[in-house]
Image 1: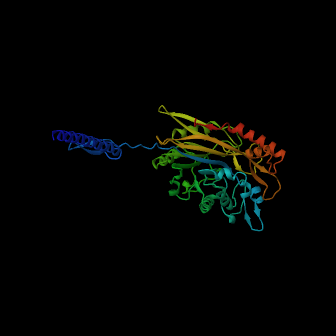
Image 2: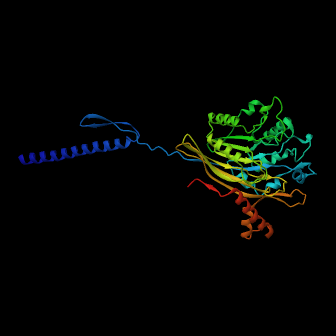
Image 3: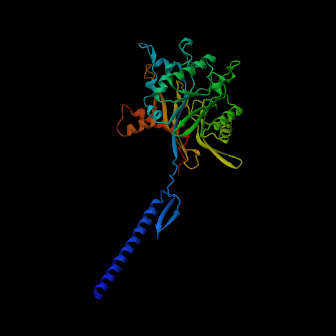
Length: 417
């Protein structure tokens, strides 16, 4: 009997020990689970030996790295609608003007942009005033429609031909641009419009566009309407730049109608004005007026020991015209890539390149007389035996004119390294 009782006591001890062990394991599992839950809960509790223990732990969450934002501006120079051009594109049957055949080879470059911008150096005064070329331009208003179909988003209107058809012509020009859905900057129909800054959201980069001209060919601004065109004046430029910054501009693009006609090198005044604009936080300067290409470069300056830098294209040449002076048919579509740093929100020019273009005149006096030729495409097609009608003479022309563009503009700019 004593032996049985002893065996029974041993058995109880073994069972009790296992139960204790299981209890300890349950607490350990509970605590382990609570550690995991602490990743989402800052306060946890556990029961140990009949007592409730409260613990705290910081939330373990990963903060995503802010991403950089990028945008591409495609820019081109003067649209000079000489009478030779609008006469060539006129369709007598439809009594309409169709400029689109001129753009077929370069359209893809204008379309593939976050925003595209050019300089309108011809008024849209309407048919009643009579279409005309140099010296007092009045282009067929259908050009605005064709520019929109080309992919143009913004046209600057501050230049020396702004008042060719007076204030009424200036107003009509802006009306036709509005009707076509093209934004504009540089001229104004009212004081309120002059004081309104043109902004575009470029993939999350709030960008202001401004435009100024050296003059209006001696045609005075109408009395009481001095607001109608932005002239190059440091006080005015600084005022508009500061207004853009106060309204949240993260990048500022300024179009400048300046320089000396037919000179392929910028002058000292252009360089001084460029530094003034960059000192005042302008990121990109787009030059026009000389009717020929000029240098593209990064320009830096210092303000109170702080270095500031901006891109300057001193002249973009004629986007199209009937001019025959040396270098007036050489032009380019400029591609400026902006980058907004995800951490600092600072916007800078990441890269600047260009597509060399040549304004070709076949002198046939029909709708296909003028063509804007993509010189890179001609060279590539010819070398790949995909000639698409390009003759050897046209291939040689493309090589020569591309080299001319490169010699004047200079190399591509890459700040991404």
